[in-house]
Image: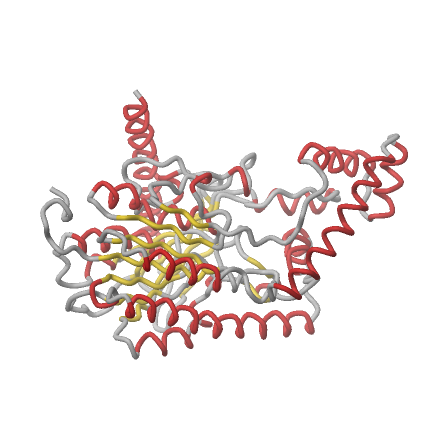
Length: 463
């Protein structure tokens, strides 16, 4: 029997995802939340270096290979979707009588990408670009660019004229003018890109709570202010894709600018999270709620000669903050393992069932993270050398954390590309490598079994 029909006061659940926040820039947030009784966890590993697979893992309790919402050679970015099953947290909590809300500034985190089970989904449109070109016209431009090897805008214009498409050239020029106008208008009227929806999400939360919704509540929020771009006309995304395929380094002045803006946004979002907690307190929900504050992945800001996220398994992308305020006393055990964000679902359900007495379920001796290749679609004209470099990235790789060691396992070639100590006092041995290899193979085999079981359950539900 669910807690509502049983007449039992149930715990509300609030999950706040500060998108793109890496652990070493989360100190302002940790300091503020420590004052409110939050428990801060270290050795926390995100299951993937970008949005969709990481959120899917948090809500299903599964790693990307198991739930399937990850990039492939043919499926990139907007084509990556979670195939929801009965194991989705939002569906499970709604089945138990929860009122479920999704308030997301990230356009990937919404029902059309498989994140269903929400009674109310609020995803404000934040991209200020009004698109003039249709998807078909964009594809045609990409094809013409590739056919003619047009690497510059002038070369592309000549290629469009050579193909007898002056109308498409004019439309592309108008599209660019309108895009620039929209960017400047948004900067003046909406403080974009400094503000990427946090104010709107907080207003929507307060509006919904004013209606005195039926409790218990499950609220999932995603803040996007730490995500690129960081200033008007920011070349961040263009530089990111160039660095994927070339051995180059961003200009030092740009790196300084990005790091400063990133730090400012981290402080800004610490204040916004406090606003959310203030609203919960005002509506007398804070002390009756499990509140989790975390991130889905980090961000590279020049480390390893890269910027951005996705594709890679560096520490700056995988190590994220995790802060939890429990609704009742929970004993904290000594940290002897790692924490994967895949464990959040189990902890949430244990708290909802009022059976979490200590935080041991968060920890594992071994945790993993995955990338299946490049998550964004590359439409640029590439040289042979650039294609070879991108081809190297199109591999399923698994990061494994064990006993202070980190290994990167190339699944295609069935070998470790590296095993290195990532904590003081740890050292690499043949026994440790053998153990890690066994753990990776066990992980892959179990993920394959889970993927089949999920597919069968979905088929049974459809039938």
